[in-house]
Amino acid sequence: EDDDSMETFDPVEAGLLNIDQAAILLNEFRESFVWSFPFVVIPASTSVDALRHRHPFLFHAIIAATSYRTPSVQRQIAEEFKSQIASRIIMHSQKSLEILQGLLIYTAWYHTVYQPQTQQLSINLQLYKRKMTLAGDGHAPAARSADEKRAFLGVYYLTVAFAQAWRKRTTLVHTKFMLQCSEDVAEVPSDALISPLIRLSEVISRANDYFSFDDIDNAEVRGDIILDMSMTNFRNELELIKSSLPDSVRQNTTIILKYQLLDLWVHESALHGVLWDTPENPTSLSALRITNLFRSVAAMKTIITTLLDVPQKSLYHLAFPSWSGWFYAIILACKLVFLQ
Image (cartoon, rainbow, N blue to C red; front, side):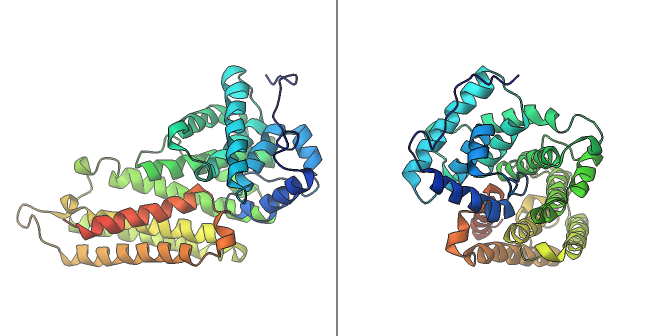
């Protein structure tokens, strides 16, 4: 249970920023950051004072994510947040929606405070998976608040994103409960992002399992015909998702980058010669493979171009899943140079 008497850390009281600066950062989170990660919403009616006193852990996470203009201050705030994780969650086993929301925000923008010597990302992921029962214990979606549904879906979204980045199988299974939650949440404009992001994440996870990207050498899906048909099927599914996007989010950078990442993801098989080789032609490039190689190159280019076109002031608003697509595209481009 939560221990209200436990000492909390307040960046404002600590003198790392003043209340006016905190209010500006909170508004920036509401107006900009939420459009990259719509799974934690702070109502406009909640003042900065109310948030920092009623939900100090969540307030701390938001300030850690948004204080990018002052890197030295951001690092101090992030270090204190790690201490709060150790104290509140690991030592005192606190469980609440606020804790889950704070972990989600901190993890979504973890790349802004990443330090190899003190990284604890894997710990964060395990912690919020353990806390998923708050929002996804099998109760009917109607019995859950919109904040709980968003947080529950945010765990799935980030879990898929990190699994894709690390080339691992997703440890969470997409369920009908998730589908219902993603369709139910429709209170604020950014909620329109949730359903398509979850749908795209589910396809990413399914494509990973289908093509065995975590173990290419032992993949069962092989050969020109089956690979080309499989990629065509995934491509058609991707087009259906794109065509069903609400008009309000069609130009959203996070949606565009997630769509482009999936486009590259389903065509990655074209780069793995072991999947296309046959005993008769062990090193030849078939017409089907060449066609899909061109598609993968086009997908790489679109991801890189999209990010390069993002205004500099908006780059810090992008959550980790958007940046992981950039690095993934660069890695595959390098692999293409040494194509086998």
